[in-house]
Image (cartoon, rainbow over all chains, first blue to last red):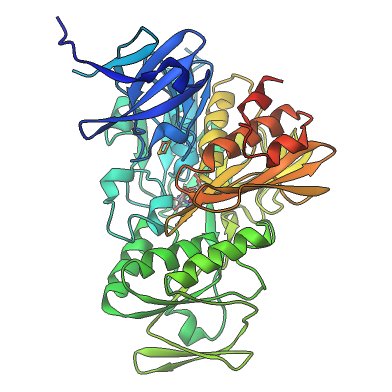
Length: 105
Length: 411
Ligand SMILES: Cc1cc2nc3c(=O)[nH]c(=O)nc-3n(C[C@H](O)[C@H](O)[C@H](O)COP(=O)(O)OP(=O)(O)OC[C@H]3O[C@@H](n4cnc5c(N)ncnc54)[C@H](O)[C@@H]3O)c2cc1C
Ligand code: FES
């Protein structure tokens, strides 16, 4: 069983629909997304270069890097458009009592 | 199996490797051979004037795909310069006079730096930056000197100026016109870039034509027409580039500021395609031919060429986009900014990003942004999408920082 380590990210309303927030925890950066299908989380740094994805464009279930337009699937982390070619790590997210949590193993 | 083809590619840069990769996705068995005159696995050029010059990145960190790309994709690489093409009999001739026959040919020879012409003896001592070998030469020489002059205040010249400044060099940039980065950049943005260089200690000389350069021992004395004198130990030229088409002079291939191609990457010769910096292509959105020198274009047009060569008819419709990094600032430019009715500004400082939207007939036709890394990418990308969709814009939203631009995409 995967280790469970749920960390509170913030209130549901702190993330706009079709948008994301950056969440820093234990010297790591994550992106937590809110899209039509729910909440998701990935690593916060692009796999092409060391660039934060927090300022990227969220469209449907994709996040596009603000630096060179590499695109990743928010739900799976898959790199779907170059120059990104390595996938992003994804993390489970849950919502309880109006709060968003991310599971960081 | 007579459907198997022999695909040859001249040039082993960005457009070539993306074309080969895309072709292979669609055709597992035809043979692909890339000819390149650089003895390196294809690599990204942007870091050459940025992180590589500043010793922040090594070559292996900016290769395209992995080092096993050629084996994994069953693509052959031949490290040879191609001297000419016999389009009638469909073969290439390499520098050592060998013939290579093709069924389909892709030309991705990129562009070549324009050379400064002042005086033969001096001209030979000027450094240029197009490839890894030249970047290594610049790095080596720069490590031995303190004062460096850069001729040309375009993107590459300014990036070199920024990187060498960060290596503690004293840098002079000599620009012939009255603005950095050419007319396509709005002057307020060009002025902010100039201020950033000056804040960091670079000296920017606008409206400055070189009258003469004199060599004194190991150093140079550059005399400008306004009688200003710049003393320097190293000169780097960054005065633009021209498409690499010399090997096609006197051939059937139609050339006009590059190789003329249609929206399917086809040239005037059957079964011959071109992509990247070298192609002057028809853009259906702008209804005219354009030639671009940008990373995204080389990538996307390369991919499109790979599809078309594999027999999948695909129009090339990418909206132009490029970026430049200088000091802490990231500049992004999308669309075409040469034909517009008005400019709408968004943002007030580079810390949060400033964007100029170029508007024609209530539609965005181009946008240019400058800001700290990450601050303009999203809205510039939204602008690209709005340009592509030719959306009629409520102009008030563009300048209102309290309103996000994302909802415009839903229209
Ligand atoms: C220093 C530098 C910094 C840049 N920074 C940016 C940036 O920040 N943002 C941006 O958007 N763009 C940038 N660019 C532009 C971008 O890198 C180019 O537009 C892109 O590389 C073009 O790809 P290409 O495949 O058309 O040509 P190239 O990548 O130039 O590849 C062409 C290849 O063909 C080879 N070749 C040419 N003739 C022959 C022949 N006869 N036989 C065999 N081989 C041949 C060349 O040696 C070269 O290896 C930069 C370019 C440079 C040089
Ligand atoms: S840093 Fe994200 S695509 Fe390049």
